[in-house]
Length: 433
Image 1 (cartoon, one colour):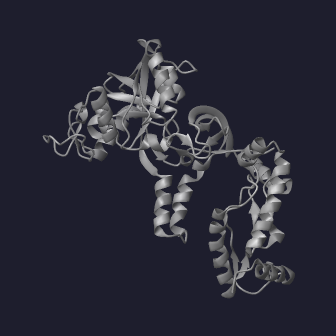
Image 2 (cartoon, helix red, strand yellow; image 1 turned 90 degrees about the vertical axis):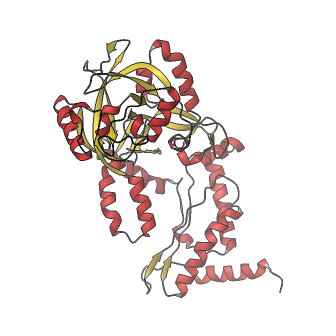
Image 3 (cartoon, helix red, strand yellow; image 1 turned 180 degrees about the vertical axis):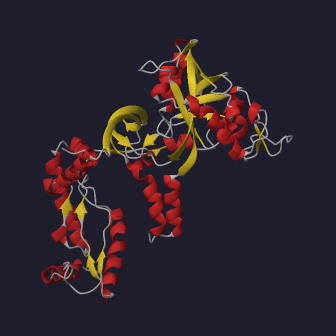
């Protein structure tokens, strides 16, 4: 028998009249909440990809009903933000008019598909009765100090006029419009999610999630126990000062404080304000050219271990906190301002990235860790071992060396034990109204 939409319409009408998919919280059966991503009404119609997404969940929710579950399956529209604004700009129609009109079309399309939604619970995020609760939640976070503003580097699409996540940058371009993405500093709102980093880690084992997923989450949060070490710095032969007149300190976080005696240069992120501060007049042109160059790459591309190492000398020097030796400060895109402190102490003999960088730019490579005191291990030697060529710390093992280095520097305020998280210090949010 040939397919006819009349059959669909007949039964869809019957389902609506009998309220077959109406959710009744008092109905018998174990409750099951089914929710997919909401559509963006930033175009006039749904496309095949929408039904590819919704059909799987719809089939599953039908099966669960037949198994006796009391299924709650709502639908809505994520109708606020940039996509709706861009569509309005493109069409010349007021965003309220275009968005509500598109929602009407998509509602009918979804109903024609015969999905099992309970439309009594429909929401549209552009309506005040919905977004007032976003505002309420934001104000509560603000009161608790968990929402704040600060200046930070972002991926910026000049065509869409919006910030992009790293995953939305493909080969240096915006995934939507393919415009070349820029890195720029912007004042934005943030959520202080790292206040809960340890709690997130502690609760992961209790979740009924696949072990693979929990491992991914654990790595994403990325707890590291290490040491924060400070370096003073000089520019044009003079000690740099902070705003309060004290010596400016470059702070680095490391899990390998035992390698401190092998530091031969320091690296700052090119987009960090520190980079501009540290750059001398003689090096400014090259540094600014390099800063412009690095704006084209996403953070994911920059963190890749296979990417070619690039960089430029700032003209300034860091002062080794133990030896007092001056080591050059370079800007390189393998250091990112929003990760850690945005400053890295480079130990090329014992780190693969630092080693590649040092070889390319002919920087010193000093072995300070060995498998045994007299061993000539192949460099870069990244394993734990005993200290060599490290003066008073020679012969100490990994843990003992770290303890001794902290003990020496801590009274001077140049080192402290610290727990760091790979989890970003904050996440960008948009505030409506």
